[in-house]
Length: 236
Image (cartoon, rainbow, N blue to C red; front, top):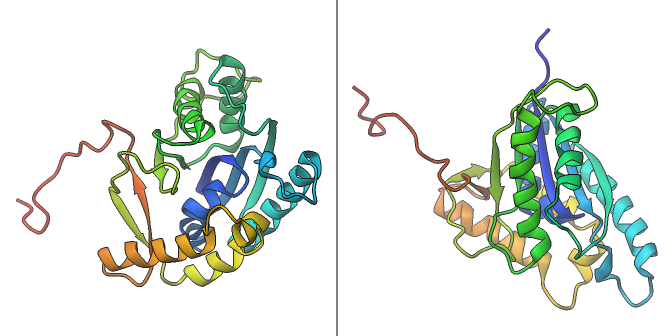
């Protein structure tokens, strides 16, 4: 029996990869893939005045689980601290071990340039973990080596140099995506950024450009979009 394909989305905080690629995730879940959202931190330090940092962490983890359920996946939140992510061997090994357990077919994460250090660090952690996951010379809890390709997705804080390579038609998934997003307090109540309006508009704009009603985009890792082939429509 062929193993189910698995899409894993890795974000710095609860909410990041859902807004970036939640509609894509739902599309693949509907197609029968396993989908897992992995959050390195809860993003707890953007806590509202009525909640402590720890209370907001617990709230965001529950929100992430609800959002994942709506989108057809599951949520995993690690215990690293918001705004304190570091690229070191400990976190790379931990993420690599998790990837050997999950055995993703493909991974989606942040773009490498960001105004938020956690986002850019997350992207570099995923890239470093890709190497450690794939090399059999690393003994990670006795788990077999596993290689995964990864792509970057679109976040308003990560736009320096982000030029999409792939436009994914998510017209049929977009209403469910918006419903899912509405379960995050910060998306619906932030006074510093209009998350819900932005990502609804972004899906519309990316859809216009790609001749769909709604779309979300992906970008190849730097140097990873070299392809052999022919002029489209003129294969010889």
